[in-house]
Image (tube, rainbow, N blue to C red; front, side, top):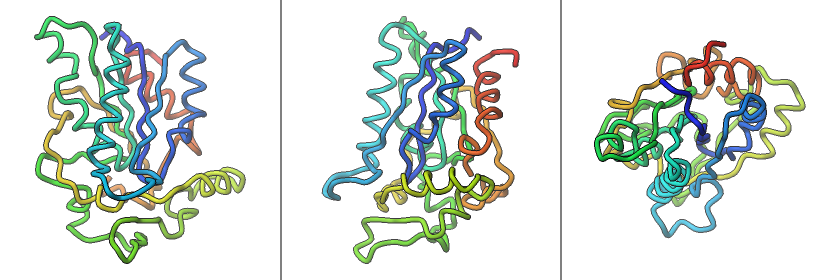
Length: 230
């Protein structure tokens, strides 16, 4: 497989894609192009719209912009971000576009401590239909915050990393966790899964965030998924 021209980064709940910056810097140093998706469901201004669909459309627009010149795209997804990402890839994968006589498309999915969800299921259903103990959900059931993110998300990061990361977290649209998926791109798009054995948010049995504490390892894993010998 030829190396994808662009690596697209999609964060999980509560996070900005800026959390990937250490990995992005390393990839760009070896001539990868990168794009970051800022999810509308993170720190939403109001809750009158369908933020899951807004996330899907935001991701899809970034993919379409990246493949407009016929480029291939490797999509990196973290945690919740995999759900709207799979929806957004519908019809934009490399194989489908080639059948339509079009160049470029999504050539690879890279799951980082993320969710692989089948059609008809939601993020909450991955937890048996119940909130995790560290979910702090607002009384109106519209907003969710993580309790104890220092331990849940960043348990092997240094003090400076933890302070900066926690300060960057924002509220997330709780209802996005309940939206069932209607498309599973992972069934047709070649995929790689990066396991994070010390994850406190998504235990290894279900499968943290190595782009904070292990950016070198994650960069190398992305390059291997893209076809580089590293």
